[in-house]
Length: 250
Image (tube, rainbow, N blue to C red):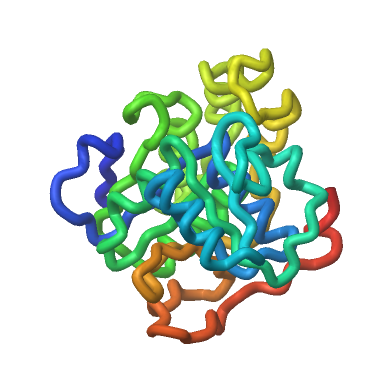
């Protein structure tokens, strides 16, 4: 399996298979949202797009990076989201790097969004898919975020069937710039415990697959043996997982 590790701005053309990595915090938050019962996550291209979606669908939950803001229901913090009841809800997510990376590869045949919390499930989907080439989109710090690169490299090794010790990868993430900024309160709309939650390897048993639906880029959990086909307009997501009460716990 040939692999490439690129920042969002370095993407040229449309990859066949893309794994979009945002450890701290977009796709850790997304995984927690699904564990708390969310039906789907709509990835918004801008804050204005997120607010417009919220205005059209008042029951949807809108979240963003940074400090709380009018029109948004939550911030991009796994610690602050971990006890929310999102059963059956649609979440609109807009972040600085993670959602941007996914939208940049929206035309790929398979788009997986990942962090350490869903690493093994993501690698498992890639092994089942049997892709000849996988592009890992390292979203943080213009492709240089150490926590994202470490996670991407770990998933790539696992997808190739390697018996890989995760300790060094997690250590790189734990000592990254993002981890320091979260732990010391530099980043607003965060909690110091976000770092620990972002480093919980394989906390959840599902992968997360993004695909276009009705003109939106929609992220859904997936635990089947093969990647799902992109649903048609109005189609239900037939492979939505059922999270156990244990996994829903904070």
